[in-house]
Amino acid sequence: MTKVETNAEGGRSVFGSAWSFAKAAVSPQMTPILYFLDFIVHPPIILACIAWGLYINQSHSLWFALLMVPMGLLTWTLAEYIAHRFVFHKVPGIKGMHQAHHDETLELIGTPTPISLPILLISVLWPMTYLLGTSLALLWFAGFLFGFLAYTFVHYAVHHFSSGGWRWMKRLKWQHNIHHHGTSDLNFGVSTSLWDHVFGTYSNTMRGAEH
Ligand SMILES: [Zn+2]
Ligand SMILES: [Zn+2]
Image 1: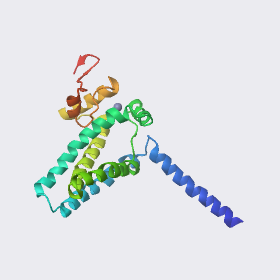
Image 2 (image 1 turned 180 degrees about the vertical axis):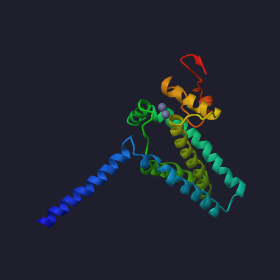
Image 3 (image 1 turned 60 degrees about the vertical axis):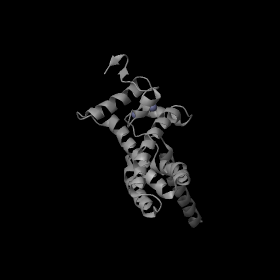
Image 4 (image 1 turned 120 degrees about the vertical axis):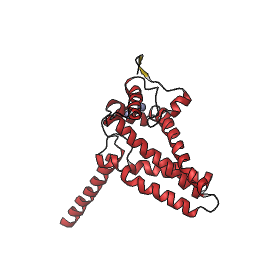
């Protein structure tokens, strides 16, 4: 009887821990470890993708293969724009999570690594292996994942760090400030304003005041 009770309690305890982890993983507000996990997990993956992609490359020149890395980075900047404009601000459920960030800009809100990484591997890397072949897709994905990591850092930095007098950082902070406190229909790019310029959603002004 005692043994059964102990087992039952143990089961509840394990279930409770798993439930707490699952809740923390899907909650828009994260612990610092969960929020910054990308910076521990992604760099080795990026390096492994480059090394593996080059190792199995047999059909392309080294320079053409390496060109895939900046191409992946450029594709990320477009993905960042599209995700922010058409997913974070439009898709029910995700919209609420992004609104939580708009309401509390300093809170650690985002999609944690255990969820975002499998999504990236399955919905981005896997289809790209069919389009480019495994070797080029791995190199392209290294650039894409680097862009994702850079975006995560830049987005944290624009909210938490001062510009330190850097013009580039000052501009990124101002542009994202307009998105948050001016019109959320403008300045969807966080790490670059390139696609806002292309699609006509760029603004350098807030409430009519020229910066
Ligand atoms: Zn923000
Ligand atoms: Zn937004």
